[in-house]
Image (cartoon, rainbow, N blue to C red; front, side):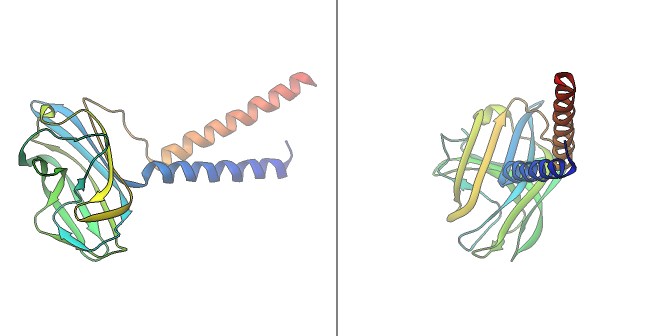
Length: 199
């Protein structure tokens, strides 16, 4: 393989890797899994852009597809360990104080901060955290749920909630790049060996 072809292949591979990473991290993601003892692990990350202004103490979605992620009336639950934050361009960053689930008039699920966090239309909304909360997995519905409707308006990317007994670890972007590079290098070596065998 010539240097020019190798450079073209490398540039294409890098672009595809970046696209996959950006696609995997777009939107607000929340994973809730069973931690045993009537507790659950809440891992949340990602960001999106608001199409409306608002002020509330969580990034709650509404009108979920394909159904409701929670089956309990409503309650807030304390954090047993870990931490998290919610951030908006206009409102800054606030620490998560508890988690909330509700299935009364609307279905809501998410980490909450101690007081309202405001944002304006066009703001970036983001959250990050890893915590254990006193929420039993039986009060939630196993599955993956999505919406673009956030509280009283809409956002640019999906809010995704995954609820299950357990999920595999989500690889960090650096790990994805490393595995992608290793895979690309393997393809190059295999191709060169094949050509050498044919010759």
